[in-house]
Image (cartoon, rainbow, N blue to C red):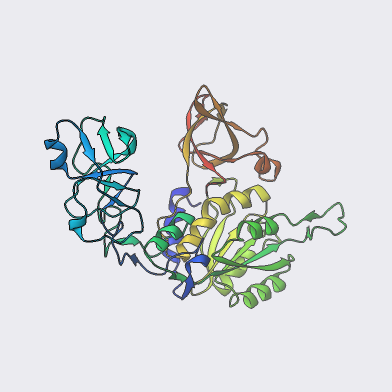
Length: 403
């Protein structure tokens, strides 16, 4: 039985990241992974500029004028090219973002003055040199590394690339992920269901989870519990995707052929883990660098294992080796006993009471209770060395929406 803390290392050591790149416009780069490091070609800000609307001074002028009465002799606005420095004498009215002429070193906000046309009276005390001035390269310096290879591009990152003057970027090509369900009892939604049948939950859940900007998701349908058909299906699919995810057929029943077949045509890296729900979870290779993720057939176990390890595996394929699901500490609003030696992930819902974050667990925690997923907003981790949980214990909570 494989321990929770070992699985990430096993996945990471088995995966060879996608090497192929494509050059795309930054307008299409949201949610993609960088194929190379990104360096700035410019300083940001490009020159010293004003952080506020106000008046620009030379610090020495402020120190010598004991009456704090000044005459404004020129004006600078954002986007204007600086004129001859000699034209800017003592006091300059300046707008936010305007460049600072050489020799000036203090900007004071308009609100700190009494203004009478071009005569201004300073109210503020404690004026500091370089006040309200953003210095050249203060944010980003020329030739500075801004993003590393494998970085996942968010909306704010696109803004940063644009600020650097970059309009096209090299990203890792989209990963092709094939989704396959296994089981005699599974049928498509919309069909008439007999009493011994169930609708395909896992495939549609996974297809939805995988629809994003860095994946081309492929629907490989349902394969029945037939040894020959499963083997033919896996052999036919191994050249059509970068990763195959199959749910079902991973246990030890007489009709559970998946693990046995993968061993025949490829290799199993690990199978069966000390995690609840999700014990039949496995991972292998159909051929060199053709990974297959084997998920449990129970819908909650399938969801939990993909949440914990599926996203991680996809990030590894994109050369992002630092990815970890986000979590934060919450206080338990329940107590329970637990078996030592395995990790457990309860479905939970958080709430705030007296300024503190608490979590309730769903009252039914079976691996087939799908309502526990739709009711909850994240997973509660119970560590392998815990034998009981007391009320108000600090627990790790993994929110769905932030992953």
